[in-house]
Length: 210
Image: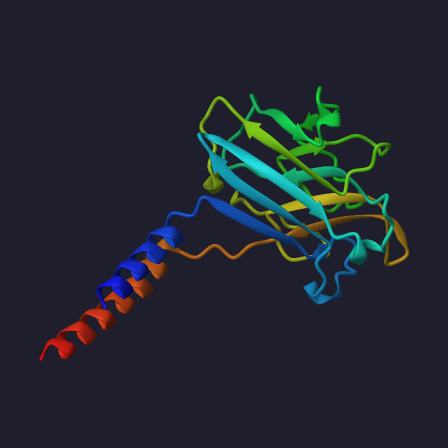
C-alpha cells in the first residue's frame, strides 16, 4: 500500500507541475472543422532551462494526403509583451540559418477574424516541411504558463495556438489555418482530487492494520 501511496503522490506532483503541453489542431478557421473530430496536426511544447522547445507535426492523411503539405506559419500568444524573442535550433537543419521570421503581431493567413500575439513564418514552400522543431527564447525565462492565453476567432472556439498549412486539400481549399486548445487542469482541483485519493489509500492502510 505504501508503494501505491508513493505512486499517487508522484502522479499528483506531475500533474500540478506540468512541463509539457500537447495541442491537437482540430479547429479549421473557415468553420469547416467537422465539429472538432478530425486532427489536422499537433503542436508539442516542452520547457527546457528557461526556453521552450516546440515540435509541429502535420497530419498529412487528414490534410488531403499531399506529401508536399507544408507548415507555413505558426501562431501563438504570450502572457507578456515580448520584444526580444529569438527562434533557434531548427530541425530539419536546412532551416539553419533560419529562413523563418518573427511577426509581432502577425497577419493570420486564411482567417481575417483571428488575432494572435506572435507569428513565425517558415518560408513559402520548397522545401516542404510536414514536421519541424525549434527553440523559442526570450530575455525573460519562458514557461508553459506563458502560452496559456487563448485567441477568439470568427468561426471556431477559442484556441491557444494555430498553424497555417499549405498544399492541403481539405474542404476544397489549397491551404488551411487550423487551431487547437488543450484543457488545463486547475491546480486547486487536482490538489483536491489527489488529496482525496491519498485519504482513501490511508484509510485502506489503517483498516488493513486492524
